[in-house]
Length: 269
Image (cartoon, rainbow, N blue to C red):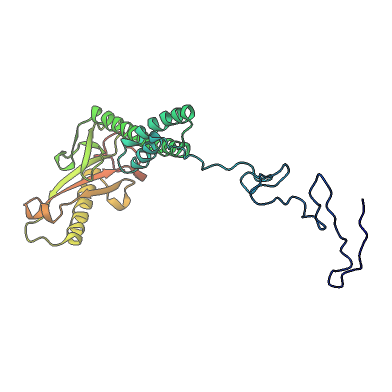
């Protein structure tokens, strides 16, 4: 069945076709909505894009990355290693703690590997330095003991004229030696300066020099300026002088500090 078309309505746009209902289905709109549009309240259809974090290109979101625990032994190793710079005994402790920390870090997956390694390095260097100092002290002590074993250490003013000696570690310390064996020097005289107020270091040195040069010539048999030997002496400082000790010890040494192998008495060297 069809209906005749009446005259056009002047108030209706001429380019819009007139739609008639079709039995069994709703009328189609003249201008369809854009692709993907859904009426409010309906479920999204397949292919609709979702906002992050569920849309393509963004992946799945995570609430946060858990923090990795720092190994306690690693921190202790670093502290002990650095502490060894002040307290040397803590340095080897830092090395041991650092090694134990590396084992735990590998097994547990903890952080702190850098601290453990730093503790091992610093602690190891400090420990090595301390061991070297101890070794040097032992060597020096052994040399000192060997000298002491072959001669008694004493003060130079306790030697008698004609005794031979090796220089010791202190300013006035010597080791007695036989004059027939290699030795550094020989006592040629002990003189006492005149009593009175302390004249000063320079004057005491000058007086001691003159007296010992004279005694050297008498003992060796030739004057200092003609001898190949060297004259030397020890003189009292103000503290000794004020206590009544004005002793000057005169000695003869080998040429150019060479060892002497016999007495220099009357040698005219």
